[in-house]
Amino acid sequence: MKKYLIFFVFAIVLLGTTVFAETTQITENVQDFVKNVIKTKGVDETQIGEITEVDFNNLPEEINLQNIDETNLALYEVQVTDEEKPIYIITASDTKIKETIKEFAQKMLLTFGYNGVISETSFLKNAVGVLGSQEKGYVMIRKGSITGLSTNLEAIDGAGNVEIIIYKNGKEFGFRNTFTVTETNTYEDYDSISQGILTFEKGDLISMKVVLTGNIQIRDITTLLEIETK
Image (cartoon, rainbow, N blue to C red):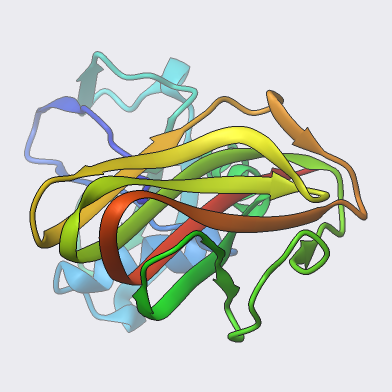
């Protein structure tokens, strides 16, 4: 799964001031990011002078910005050699960057799968190829919760139903991907669930099983389990 940072910016630029509206990737140093944006606009790094953050409540008279969410955006003023007026960069705010870092730092993906033909119910293998069981799986290092599950597989013969089921400490954990197979084809399913519903403690063991019903053969199962830890 993928996440996007999106900004809707409506800028009215007066008196010939140059304004660049940019979305930002997460960086450790905001000044370096601003410099990189400036350089992509054709300004030599040796011409870049002082960079300062502009107060939205005290904007320069050259700029009139409307419909701006100040909690998500920041405005930086960049002094450029040989330019009569500064350049202004609209980016993600430092607060928004920190919030996004914190959110992604807590998420992990556990990989399960099966790289061959399977025609009966079985546990899935982990990322290093070990077949799971009620006693074999990923041991949780921290407490947290399951927040998402996705599966891709190929049906090669027969018809029936396929379930990809999560197990915690050898017991079904109430969240799954399901498929109704009617023809040979590639199938996919993905689901998400809110944080704090399917919780686990440190030391809990997580494994996964594929359950087949009907006369069916499948192969090449790829499953991602998204967890969020505290």
